Image (tube, rainbow, N blue to C red):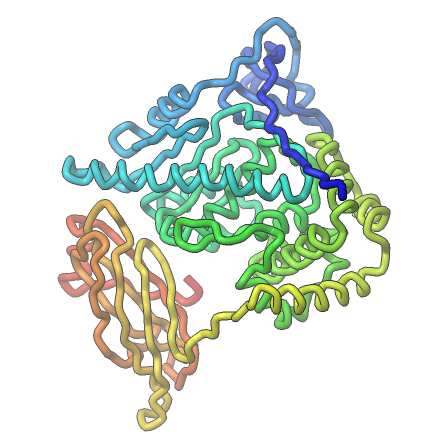
Length: 487
């Protein structure tokens, strides 16, 4: 018997020439930009800077290009200093670990006693990101994909304050994609940064997903700004699953959450995802789109390995800023996987059942009337009971944990029902990592502009502030925040 051993080689970055571009900016002034031409097309030019960021200019703004400088990526230390200058050294902390720069943007300057906790938090994040390196290489080996080392340092930005994250995301994303308040983290192809809310470091599920995007675009699988189908981009990232600060599976295994969601999807199908990305860009269908992206990717990487590898090679050759119409894109898929999409869906259903049996898969069943949530650095467990004897009023109670590892916080928790009523807890000065009860009450306060009806469902919104802030003083002195409809 001959045993075939497939190796994945991580190739070192090769020194290259760079360019000195002369650009005319919006004011009509000339400036010089040193970097590499990342791509051009659709009337634009993409220039990669030594820190890994990409800047876009119109082709008309490019006056001269002089191939006279060496390409020398910035060091992690240089990037960390640049980030400190941008956000302010008093509210920025960083940790360098290998090729990673882990940065933390604070909501307020830290007390000296919290610096040790901040350093430990950054170390934990750095360990996780290095785990991502290892698990991604394991997947590349199993799928027989060739990868190389990242050419520039990789950045993870962690925002302690949700409001700071929202402001930053609004600036970077410029209104594209999902609503900012529905995003827990994102990888941006222009900055090359992975940015997340601090609360996501409790499970690392979102950081893992976005870190896979960062791996894919920095280790030779895909090129940034290339016309890659969203289903593949999200499918490969959803294949990895985190359990606290450990990664428990890759794209070969069954994902515990997505596998249980498939049967509930009715308004979207594989045909749409293969030819169009719109479902991923809106708040309504995005959840279903991500789930189906996992399904399609899981099937192809497990049941069509040779064609999958060929497809990845095809995608890797797509040029940045190139334009591609939906028909051509669908044709590439059909060329490698066939045009009988319903047959692929049936194959997926059969393969998933077999895989779930082999993995002894047991989906977690939600507890009726119990909600577990994380918002604004609060980890919540809330139990709700409909009191028929009180006219359908919701009886609610639970507990709250301050997830912030650095400091105490004051919380306002609003539980808003579908009947236009709400319950509220003001929880002052909760110590770091401490859990406190949310005492029993009834959701009988009436929302502004509502009449108050019997209710059966609810949503929760949490605001967290520093105990010394003016907001905290207002809340504790009798002026709590009133929930807004649809906030």
